[in-house]
Length: 116
Picture 1 (cartoon, rainbow, N blue to C red):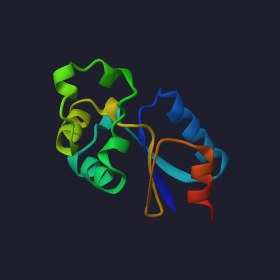
Picture 2: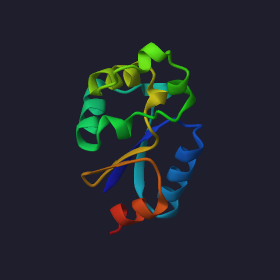
Picture 3: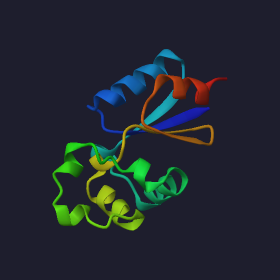
Picture 4: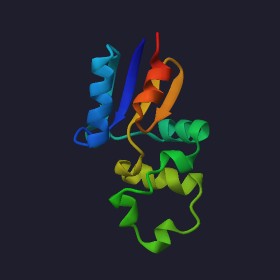
């Protein structure tokens, strides 16, 4: 099984997740938003599966620096537009592996989802 992990190269949480994958022998491909961006199809699928409230990183500085107007009346369509415009607003990491979608990094969640 090859996993695909999405995020930003210099993110500390991404570094921890990638190290965990390597230490546990999980073959993965890395998709860097800063280099390759992200498409609407991925975001809509992730939001449909996990909920836009989970996918949108409202704790990060990029979101916090938005105007109050931009944060008003958030729904999935508006959240997807924000994340398309500024992928750093996507919670990191997003991992697709074996038909599963994991958002955020917790070693115990990765262990349970990726056990052989």
